[in-house]
Every structure is written in structure tokens, then in C-alpha cells.
Length: 460
Figure 1 (spheres, helix red, strand yellow):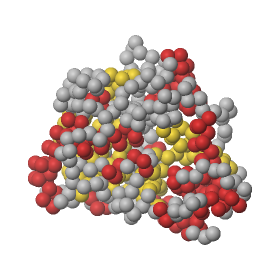
Figure 2 (cartoon, rainbow, N blue to C red):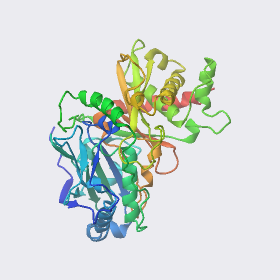
Figure 3 (tube, helix red, strand yellow):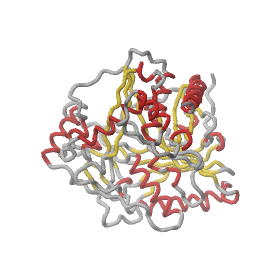
Figure 4 (cartoon, rainbow, N blue to C red):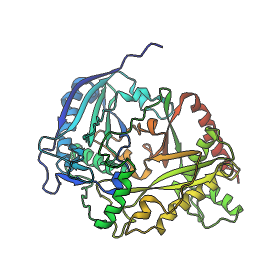
């Protein structure tokens, strides 16, 4: 098959630095053990698609009006978010990497113009080939010695709109931190001249002894004395397609005294009433079971769902919600596939997910040892591991640069990690958007499983 021409033309690659770093913003920051868990993970990538009014959608108007505002507001935002203009480095005299921002450091901003179909790329009702997104995202080059914290790309779709894409190092920016940064940038750009969230850069929440004990264990997972900062190179499959599914409040949470009736009823049949249920557990359970069926797993296998739990409020003392950096740990829901494939499979999945989340309540929060490495002393052999990216709580659809909320937000990095994403909904008709990167020949199969699963939940 002949390669398709790239519809994206690079207009410029510039560097945008902080206009004048705020006195409260540090020039360097050590990573914590929570950051180091993600040291060599591939970058997190997202794309935000925005429609523009007709008078701003032309090429001339965009480059004369919209782009200058985006650049200036980015520079103002980096006054407080200075470290995002820097790099991750590993000094020879340091036992762990640090984020550094020196004079002259800046965020790489690629400006491009695309001939692709804006409506198609930002559509929630059809599948989009993963390769269609790649040229709308910035690269985050890595080396053994240094990796940029963040790279950005703004792409104009003439007479339609524009996209903002970012690639960020997971050690520096996770979903929560990215939400704060994007909201701050958008708030300044929309002329409110005030940031929604001021990042908290504190790091003194583990004692030195606790830090050393956990640090040694984390870094040894990459091999002794391995100070390389090269990221894992996970390739996107060439036949992957992005699809979006939505769940409404009627699907998941019918307001009632008991709540989640289609899950709770099935648990009560098995005398299981003391189960942690929430939107998250119900939705994650439903998608997990659909994916297990899609992959054709057998009943004698085990499946595991890895969940990233925010620990800001779980530490003692708790960290502010505006804490800069990673403060999440993985908790694992493990189940026999035969139970998940049964009539009460989603309820069983919700049960083990709820138990995994509740298990964090019993961890030693001061030491953080249990939070990071889990409470199980012996690993469980599983046949398939599933993961989740994002959270509806991040509310990326509220990121408004002054021309309206996004038409679509896509977590594009899931085409390499294999995770399914959860996010808020842009149009208010759903309580959650579910994003998946599936092989193109599997899209219709998943849609059938999704629809039939919802129909089953409607029955008592």
C-alpha cells in the first residue's frame, strides 16, 4: 500500500520560556519515590480540539490573533510553572534524577497547519485511525542524560479550529498536574489574568530513612547504577483505531437510596452487601469485562486490572490537592476469568475493584512502603493485565482558552500502552467518556459487547 502524504505542514518550531520566573517557583526539584515509579514510562500525550468562530478560523486571523495570545499566555503561565520549561536530568553526584530549569530553558512549541478533516478527528461517534493523530502531536526527545519535561504543539485546521497537543514526561507531569497546568494556561489566555491552581512544590513528606529504603528498591528495578533516562520505546500498532463510548447517569447511577441497582442487586444475590461501590468501580468493572470478552480469554485464566490511586489525601499529613508531581500508586484488582464471564461478571468485577481501592485504607500511610509496593508479599500470576489512564475528575473538558470548551479531548498515548481512558464528557449528556485504542477489526465487536452489556443491566 502506498504511504499517504502527511497532511500536516510545520510552520515553525519555537521556544517559549517564562516571562519572568516567580520568586516562589524553584529552579530545581528532586523526584520522589512516587515519581520514580514512572521513570522510563513513555510520555503522556493528549490532544485538545477547539472549534473557532468563522472570523478567527482563517489562516491570517489565526496567526495574527489566536496564536500570539496562546504564546504570550504560555509565557506568563510558565512564570509559576517554571519547571515545565526545564528538563529531567541525573547529576553525577545525585542518587536520583532532578527536574532542573536553568536560564534560557524553554518549552518547545511546534506550530503547524493541517489539511486533515477537523470534524473527523474530533468526532466521538466514529473511529479514527491512530496514525491520523501522530503528526498533530509534539515529540519528546529523550537521551541517556536529559529529557524535556514538556513539549507542545498547536495545529491550525483552516476555517475549522485548532488543536493543542502535549507530550509530557510521566515523572514530571501526571494527569492531575497536567490538569492544573492546562487550566492555568487557559485561564490566563482567556483574559482572566488569574491562575486556577498555583502548584505546590513541597517535598518533605517522607523521612530520610524511609526515602532511602524505598528509593533503593525502586531504582534497582532498572538495574544497579543504571542512570540512563531513556524512555521505553513502545510502538503504536499500525492498525490501531481510537473509539469513544459514553455512559450516561441513567446507565450507571439511577438516583435512589441504594444506588447502582444493576450492580448491587447481583451482589445481594450472592450475599455480598458490604462492597465499595462508586461511579468509578461500576464503570471500570463494565469496561474491564467487555475487554476480557473481546480478547477471548478463557475461564481458567486470571485477569488483573491495575488502578492508579491518588495518595495526596492518604498521606499523613495529607498533601494539598495542588501538589506538583506524581502522588499515585497502583492497586490491583485480580479475579478468575470464569467469574467475570458469568451472568454476574460485572458485579464480581466491581467487588474486586472496590476491595483493591479499600485496601489502601489499611496501608501504613506514614511510611508509604505499603502504598508503593502493595501489601501482598507474594506476586499473583495473571494471564492478562489491563490498565486505566486518566480520570473523570481531571475535567479536561473545562480547559477553555477563551474560544469555548474543547470539542474533543483524546488521550492518544493509550495506543502504545494499551490502557483504556476515562474522562469527563464535553457535552454534558454523559458522566464519563471511555476511550480505547483497538485494532480496527475489533471495533465493531467491542461496540456490540458494549451495547449488549448495557441492555443486560436494564433487566432486573
